[in-house]
Image 1 (cartoon, one colour):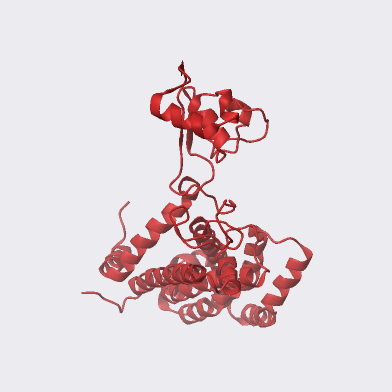
Image 2: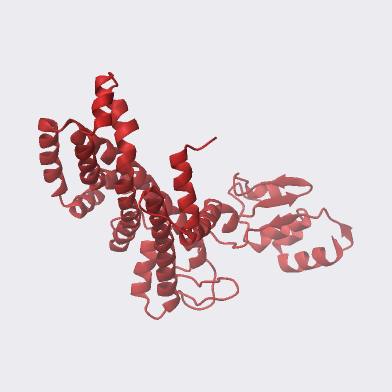
Length: 369
């Protein structure tokens, strides 16, 4: 697809902003990896080879009986008995002394002189999910070690796994909320500014009343009545966040609605919707994009604050705000505070640098050498 001369100039300006480009690459890699968090941090193997048959536990449910066990419940792949059954091909001796069987099978390919069908498990780099409770020596939270690279929290869950899943959750939440609030806010501001008069007056009074509503109190009340979940919290954030872009979009449309090209379009019979969103809105994009980093970072911060206070997502969710709360409650475990701080600082800094580059690329007054 060929870019228009205007968009080509914007793309060149963005590429010349080295800080924004590098931030985009780093953030893209980190977010891209987090999208495949199940393949990076999981308590289930990625692949299991049992008697020549391949199984994919991260996507499918396999009872223990599939691997020669006795129970119809899902196989506990982290248990030594289940691993022994898979590696040895289902030897019954695994229930008596799994460690001896696995050692002999790996070394000789057989057990007690009998040929066995070899199997294997392909584990993710981090063999823990965000909600996996690990068997650790001593009390939780435990310090970083070879098994838990960033340590564990106060319920013995791997911190690195929770950071990976929490990063994905926070960014996805912020992008969804920002996209929805931007659509609503831009549409409302465009209608106000373009039509003006009573339309603008009535909308302004509604926004003033709605903007004075205490958002945090409403979310607390709703959380006390209805169990909070991801999409309910998205809806509440959009419900109170759509007014953030109305003012700047309204001002741009009020300024541009009497320009000569708008009058000429009206005289030619061009529809109002076409004039608003094809001709006037592009001129308002610089001011609009300027506010986007504040909305994205503010949404991430709001989610962290709500989770910190206990009114956000369920406690079982991989929340960075909940990790911050644990850091506050466990001052003897500084790795929790350092991890939370570095994660938030890196995430928010990269997003701000990216949106600064986008904003400057849309600004015709900005040039880069």
